Length: 230
Image (cartoon, rainbow, N blue to C red):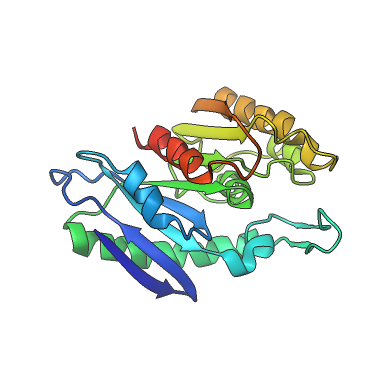
C-alpha cells in the first residue's frame, strides 16, 4: 500500500506491506529525489516484510539540506554546499511524526524501530545524523559522499549519539577513479567510516559494486535496505 503526501513542502511517499501478520517492526526513511520510489519499494518488498518505507524528496535543497557544513562546489558551474543538515534534520523529525501517525492508521500498529538511509549526499546525511540524534537504530549509506571536506576527521573526533545496530556502506568500485582530488578519497573515507562503526559495536557491511557513482542506483539502494531490514 502507498500514500503520497506533501509534508513541510516535501513530497513524501509512505509504503507499507499489504500484510505483515501484525508484526511491523521498523520504518526506514530514505532521503532523496527518488522518482524511482515505486521501483525501489517493488524490488525491496518481499513476503511478510516487516518494514515500512518512507521516501522524502529533497531535490530542490540537495546541496544545502544534506551537508553538515558549508563547503565550496566540486565543479566549475556547480553550486556550493550550504551546510544546513542540522536544520533539515529538525524538519525531518516533524515529517517523521506525521508519517508514523499515518503508518499507524494504515496498519493498526506503530513500528518500534527506525532506520535512516540515503544515496550520495543523502548517504552522507544519514551517517552524520547518528552524531546528532539518537532516534534511529539502523543505517544504510549507498555511495555516500563521505569524501566531504573534513568529514572523516569529524567522525574520528566526535561520539555517536547512538551506536546503530546494523550499518550498510557501499560504493561503486570506480568512484575513486576521478580527477577530482576531493572525491578521489571516497573509498578511503568510507572504509574509515566502516572501521569506526565496527569498533563501536555495529554489525557493519562495506560492499563494493561494479561501476561508477550513477550506475544501478535503484539496485544499490535496495541492497542496503535489505541488509538493514533483516
